[in-house]
Each structure stands twice: as C-alpha cells, then as structure tokens.
Length: 577
Figure 1 (cartoon, rainbow, N blue to C red):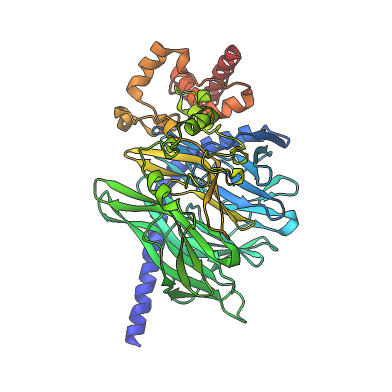
Figure 2 (figure 1 turned 60 degrees about the horizontal axis):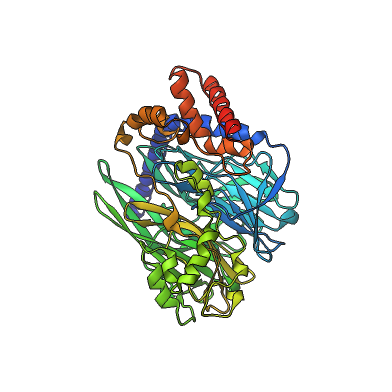
C-alpha cells in the first residue's frame, strides 16, 4: 500500500508541475500573442472583403512546408491548405486553398470568403459526411522575423460540396497548439499532443481530446495505462482493428539556462477503446518487430492500401550546445498493424539507389541528375525563373514556383520511351522533412517540404507520385530547381531589431533607412504581369506597413499607418501598371 500511495503521490506531483508550467507559459506568451492578434485580425479584414467564391486555374503553388495535403473523399482531387516559407530573413504564412486534379494534372486556386487565418503546422482531416468535409484544428502563426508565435485553438470545417468555410465554436476543446496530430475515428475526431511556444518558454502536450461530429462537442479523455510522454510531430493513425497508433515525435526540455536538449522519440503506443465501456480508453506500449525507422523527426505520414501506415523522410538532428546539424532522409517505411511489424519500402527500379545518392547531394542542382545536356536545357525555360523578382523576398516567395505546370504529360527522359512515367527513372525526391503526403487510388503523392544546405534552408515546391502496388519508381509531376531559389542572408543588425520592426519585415535596421533613400523605388515589391491590386496588397502589405511607419513616425496609430501603407501601395501599383 505504501509503495502504491507513494507512486500516486508522485504522479499527482508531475501533474501539478505540468499545470504550473502551462500557466507560466500562458502568462508569458499572452503579451506577444496579443501583438500578433492585431496582425491576424488585419489579415482577416482583408479576407472578409472577398464576398464570392473565385476559382482560378493556376501554376503549382509556391514553396512551402507544414501545410496540409488532403484527399477529396468523392473526387480525384488533392486539397492543399496553408503552410509556411522562410527566405532567410522573413517568414511567410499562408491560408491559400489549392485543388490539384489528379486526372487532368492541373492546379486551381480557390478563394472562399471568410477562410481560417493564415497558419502552418495545423491538422486537417477529411470525412465523407455531407458530400465531404475538411476539418482543421490549431496550428501557428509567426511574426515575419520568426521570433513570436501565436498558437490557434480554433476549429474550422470546409464543406467541400458547397465550398464554404465555417468556424465551429465549441467550448472545452484543446488549448492553443501546433504540431499536434488528429485522425478521424468512427464519427469523431481524435486529437493528441502538440506544443505551445513563446519567446522564452515552451510546453509539450500528451493529452487526448475527442470531437463528436454529430453533437459538435469536445471531450477530454483520461485513458488508463502508461501513455506517451509529451511530444509533437508524431505518427498517429487508425488500425484496421479500430485502435490508434502513436509512434515517435519530438520534444525538448531545458537542461540549464538558455540550453535546451531535444529528444527524437522512437517509442510506440496503442490507444484502444475498451469494449462495452463507452468513453473509456487504455494506453498500451507496443514493441513492433521488423525493420524500424531510424531515429528522426519531421517525418510525413499517410495511410497506404490495406490500412498500412506509411512514413516518409524526416531529419535526424545532431545537437550540440552551439550548433545543430541535420541528416535528411527520403526513405519509406510501412507499419502493418495487423502483424505489428515495420518494414522498409524498397523500390524495384534498378536505378533508384544510384539516383538517390545523387539527389542527396545538397549542393548539386537537380539538373545535374540528367546526364543529357539537351534534356537539362529543355527543362530550364519551364522553370519560368524570369518571373522571379530577385530584389524582393516577398515576390520570390510567391512566384518562384511557377514551374513546369502539367509536366507529367511530357516525357522527361531521352533514354526511356515511356511518357507515362514522366521522368521516373531519372529522379527521386530529395531528402527532406516536413513534407506533405496523401494517398489516392493506391498512389502516394508527395509535395514540398524543406532541407538544409549549410546555413541555408531550402523550401521545396515539387510534386512526386509513387504507385504503391508496383513500387517501381517515382514519377515527377512538378519539378522545381531549388538552386534557383533566392536566399537572403541574415543581417548583422538583426539583434538590434525590436519585435515590432521584425513583424513588419525582419530586415536590417541600420541599412533600411539608407537603402530606402538611395535605392528608392526599385526596392519596392514589383508587380507581376497580370496581377490585380487585390492580390498584390496582401502579398506585399508588410513591406508597405513598415515603410508607412517610417514615414508617419512610431507614435502614429495603427489605423493611420495602415491607411498610409495602402495609399502608398496603390500609388506604386498604379504607376507600375
């Protein structure tokens, strides 16, 4: 009895510590989240001006990571929402909605009134009810300097049949977070884990919530047994038997002042509903056999045929106190819940391993994989690199990916007379983390993500496809050369920039005043051909707000700053037309 009581007391102590930590993080982050709320509200005001649904055929989306890629339950379509991009100085968040038509190999940008605010690292789950619904919870918004974060706790549903967004307000749900995981289970959404981070503190979660799709109510579960430690970015999937598997993930803890130690988890747990006891769940730790994934974080997950869970890529970070080095992957693993076994996904194509090594070389342009110079030159114009505005990071971010639309319909190899494979023998996806995965008709689709080349973070915008029945070779649907992507080096005066200035551009304080006077108008974000002001303003607004604040002074009210910013942007846009 004594030992049991001591163990329970220790458990209650851990709960108290976690509660105190959450309260501490909440208090410290409240101020910076209030600052970002004003910026988010402003973006929502711009979104509210759109009063009708507009569907526009377009080139593939811009580079991004931590977006969501979902499968339409009734149509041959993939749905891309949100995500983030970093160009070396500035972080960009998106709430754009794109539809990829698998049969036609075409992209469409769908603008719907009153969408969720811009975000990344959210979760999206599709259910078949009502002609198809896309449910989105949480995620984060970051200031452009990447120093402040706002974590959402909102729940949205996109009604696919009517193309309308709806925010579902229901009390008792999870706290604001990102990096959590969410799955559909029967007529419920089940959510696990995630993290919340402020400038100085962070907290990781291992709580479990359910959302009833019939009653629109949240419930917090209290499973028995020993479950996973707090973490984010784990694998979460439903087994054929109706249980839920949790694998891996990432967390960090403070080992001493200003020094954090990260942990790449490799343990695995089963969350099972107890038969005959509604609302009662139990955790069980499991130890699968087979070839397990090597330790990593930032991997991507999808459900393969036969309810097997597919894991792709990720990064293994080697952390030291002053540095962080990452080894990125592009390998595949499958988890068979029926056999409780992992196995590695091996491609049957004879050239796969050779090409894998080549594409794993970070400093080598993708064109170097194509041994025929005629092949490489034939692809160069399709990148449409000329439309990238090198002088302005914002424009680069959005327009860099106007690359090879519909390329899957064109042969990409001079050696192989197989147009349908579209260059499959030549390429494999680069090793990467935080990519987007989806499976439709037993085909795996891989989009975007990121890898590092030295101090540079390269964000991807390519699209690949793999037949999971044949497992022969990757097919490239959209190819983009990351070597053409401009990277803006961090400025020496970054440490002197306060949060407000960072939120407006994250650029160099000392150089800004001089460069704005010396360089003048050429430094303004350029208007791309055919662009409307309604699209130009949201894309460049942070730049104009910074310029306007310099013009009217730091004491001016935010409303006046915005008015001046919009006036300056409109004047420049009209002059450029």
